[in-house]
Amino acid sequence: MTPPVLITLQTVPDDARGFLSIAQMDSHLPFVVKRYFTMTGMHKGMVRGNHAHRAQSQFFNALNGVFELVVEGHMGMQTFKLDHPGQALNVPPLHWVTITSLEDNGILLVCASDLYDSSDYICDHTEFKTLL
Image 1 (cartoon, rainbow, N blue to C red):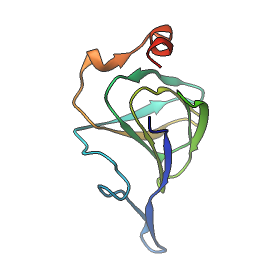
Image 2 (image 1 turned 90 degrees about the vertical axis):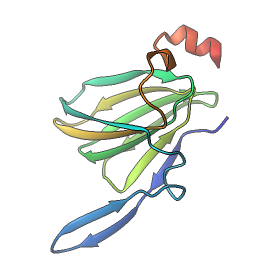
Image 3 (image 1 turned 180 degrees about the vertical axis):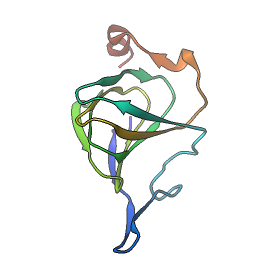
Image 4 (image 1 turned 60 degrees about the horizontal axis):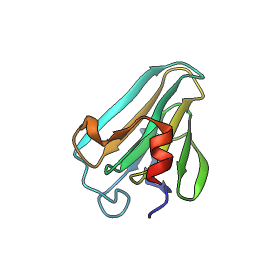
């Protein structure tokens, strides 16, 4: 089973125009993106996620703000801090993810490997542990 991987994205600085962070298929994104969503308007300390996916992979990228992602899988728990758009976290299926906003009004981009399917979600932690 593949573990979560923190990915450094190609970042092109331009003093006059800011930064450009790039994620490309195969180089950074290990799957075809079939859906994306953003988490916005979160206050410091707010928690999202608290579930796993049976088959979907997810790619998390903090566009603005700071987020802590606690990821639990077959290798135990790992904590990742996303604090700039130049890095992203790839999380394969069967990993429980808890997202905490560490600042007000951050923006977290989440790319998913498949369309929304409620049956893909594992929202009961006991069930998740059994599946591991």
